[in-house]
Amino acid sequence: MFLGEYEHTIDDKGRLAIPARFRDALNEGVVITRGFDKCLMGFPRSVWEELARQVSSLPIGSEETRQLQRMLFSGAADMTLDRQGRILIPQNLREFAELGDQAIIAGLNRHFEIWAPRRWQNVLSAMDANASLFAQKLAELRF
Image (cartoon, rainbow, N blue to C red; front, side, top):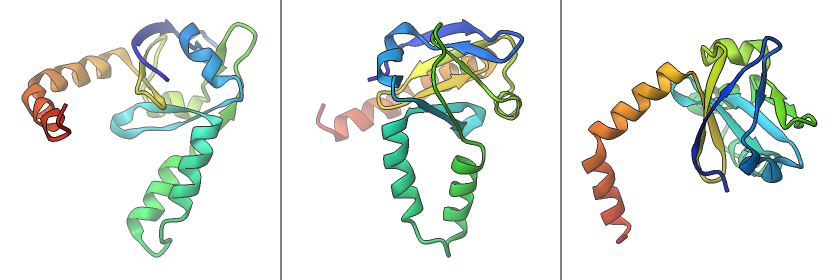
């Protein structure tokens, strides 16, 4: 399970340290791909394989399906953590997410996101502005 928010440095080679709490879940490997809202998404390989099966089963005749498949699969990078618990984020993905030398890693239960700090601050502001809508969603779940 991926929980929490962490700020880490990206070195000159594009390596990013994964939070220690996340590493055990990524022992089998990690897939990083383009995310929504100009972030990157990271998945344990088993979760990625489940997602890939589901997305691949969607009707290819649908333009939305093809766009989703392009977004997820064409930019995906399959990797393993190095001995220091880092991943090498490919240049094209760093450019997509506008990552510089800092990144925010946000846990989202079954996967995590990697954000440029400025963009993450915008996300937090939007979440604050929509707090009452989120409360309604929880109420719908009877929570």
